[in-house]
Image 1 (cartoon, one colour):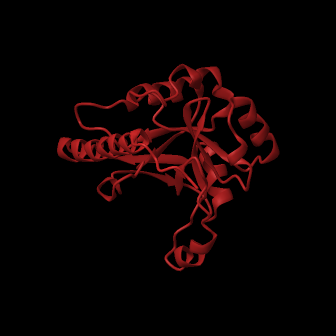
Image 2 (cartoon, helix red, strand yellow):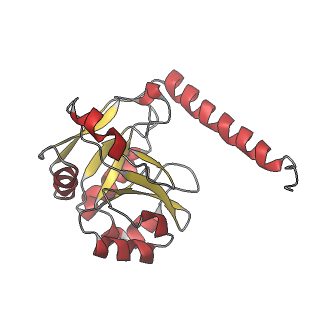
Length: 196
């Protein structure tokens, strides 16, 4: 489970999840030098990662963590694009993102890049709306604990299960996210009351 920029403390949810056979892996989708990077299963320190040099230090200090390239070639200023190749050694896996349709799929370049660089692909829902849940995910050959799952992914013992979303779902999800961005921008533009 990841949030943008801050790690969710999954501790309070672990017993609830375990009773249902679910393994929670903490993580964060961090903006590093303006590019999105998924940091999974790092015990601490993700909030201090601002540069790729910081990421290199974090990986050296916490070798059980997993670094994934999310939506690396999707349109948008926060996708990795050439930065992925520039820092290829830092990435353990590449994401196959659920937000695609049968006729428009930006994951092709990511899959080709992963093959060329010997990196495994992981299926990720990138769930911002519940309608996205369940269309793309990973099957991992590992014991049911976070460290074993991350190690298995890094070793390539993972298989992506995926199906495209409908155009209606894609438009609804993207539209709702854009609306929130626009509303958020408007809130930033409004004059704020002076603090006393």
